[in-house]
Amino acid sequence: MNRRIAGVVIPLLGILPLAFAQSQSTQQSTQQAADPQQAQSTQAAQSGAAAQAAPPAAPQAAPPANANDKLVLELPSNRWFEGPLTRVTVSPDGKWALFNGHGGKGDLSLISFKTGADDLYRRMGDLNRLDNEVFCGTGVARLGERLTEDGWFLPEDDGAELSALPADAIPMCAQDQTELAYYRTDAPDQAVFLEVRGRFRDYGVGGRITAMAFSPDGSYFYDLLFHPNVGDSSLVRIDVNTGAAKVVAAHLDASPLPGRLALSSDGRKIYLPLASDGAPNNEQRHQPDADRWLKIYSLDLATGARQRVIESAGQDNVAPTISGGNLYWVRTVYHDGIALVPAAGGEAREIVPGGELPMWSPDSKRVGYFYGGWRLADWPLDLDDAVVSIDDQGNVASQPVVIVSGYHEDFSPAWSPDGKWIAWHSHRSPKPVPEYGSADSTDDIYLRKADDVHAPEIRLTDFGWETGPAFWSPDGTKLLFSSWEHGQPGIDKLFVLTFDPEMGRVTKSERLPLPAEIRSASWAAWSPDGLQIAIEDNRGGDSRALWTVHADGSHADKLLDYKGTTYDGVDWTSDGKTIVYSALADGRLQLFVVPSFGGAPRQLTRDSGNLLHPVVSPDGKWIACTRLVQSKQIWRRPLN
Image (cartoon, rainbow, N blue to C red; front, top):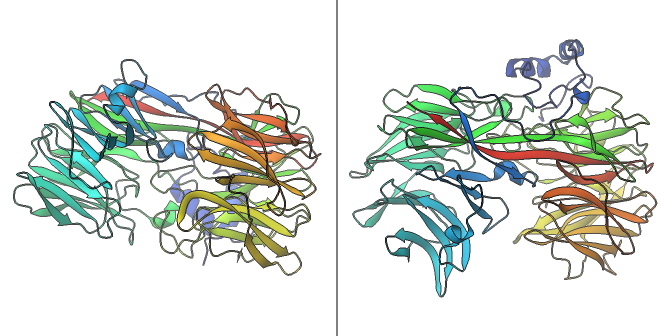
């Protein structure tokens, strides 16, 4: 059975980031799910209007938990979900930070703590192509190409030397750079490979490797293993000389995503990010308001005792590194919300903190969105959908209520033109799963009666792969969405479902034939008359193009090229004369319009945050959009 809301639709307070709603505990969330009547009474008694909370204009540093904590570096992000997924590693000498983005090969930055700038020369070295990079002792190991050589280049005294490591290796060096370990991301059965006296010895592991570290003296190697069937992790120690392996700690509440470990200088403690000091609860992974943000713990390697060292409400703290008697760590600062912009342009006014990817109801009186937050421990299992009413002045006129809730990710609900149905992208699973790619998960378009939260969820597709939001044709007979095709990861194709609104079923499913000039149709929207489709084409990197095609995919017309960073979004104005899109301006995503027949674009917004996913209200008065302000912060605390 899906985790659905029993009884009436309940008021939703969980849309607020935990920094605004710390009073909601995991225990309260569980009780509310079990007793909705009590939950409704309890939540109605809460004072303060969640939807009216004022958002910060820029990333705000959380109050230090320790007076000696110091913010070393902050790097803002102009991406969407890719921002929290960006991995940051501090160098062993505490002078550099390596940012490994989520944009594919070569999406790297090597930032100096002294200058705050990316050192391109130091990052590239003598390579003409760079695909990946990790700190290796006092140097840097690089995956890329140098003239005719291709592979992993390891640092040597006289420069970088091509190694025999496979291209899919993730290497880890000891502090003195004399020992090396690695695992392979593409291997069907994972193993860790340790270099012993110039030769590699492999050790099979009972799980998926998410983090590795050598002890300070190089005698031991530690790996953190995630167990997909259960959802917990274990810390294993391998004696480098004898090969003996021992489980140091089991049932850890760690993230399934790649991370980092750090050992104290005496080798007695290990620092690692955990959501809690107990075993993970897979049911709670799917709770939008669960306090499952990652904290830094120290774990005593002799006793297994765990102590919480670093935490900040509503923010993930990860990637511990020890250098020069200091503990460094990385904090993800993320503020999201739904904003409204007048259709003619102007100020973006945030109306719903904690929401993303807005959808309008046909009467322009409600906005639906997803909420939950991008917790790295549960990525993104905790996303559910809510809706608020909007008055004629663009103000929130009701408390948020849940409209879609179930196990795993739910994108925002799209209303059919007659208001009877909602369609949305979901990874719905029949039971609580521990991670994004769990076997019981789906990745498709779902349908349900709009105003009945108890109505059955109807799965419309069975072929999705990184499926995007669903959009209705103006006559309510077709659904348009993007999806990868198997065999072509990273390339979005457009699909159209022909829908029988009386029977509530799909009568035809087809891929829209697009010309080869359109590389990847990452976002699309119907024109108001249903005769055309606007397409955001991801050309690779930050290159984007805006196209219009006929409803059958023919007669492609490129309107302009521009710069973007993610699934930026596109829509039509209600008169069909103008197309709204999100593009980079001065390092931030802003809203623009361009005539649908081509011409000069015009910038609508100059917000301090990033504005994306524009959706024009059916009455033509407003543009709803996602507003994001996010950054990666590197902090330092003395350990003495």
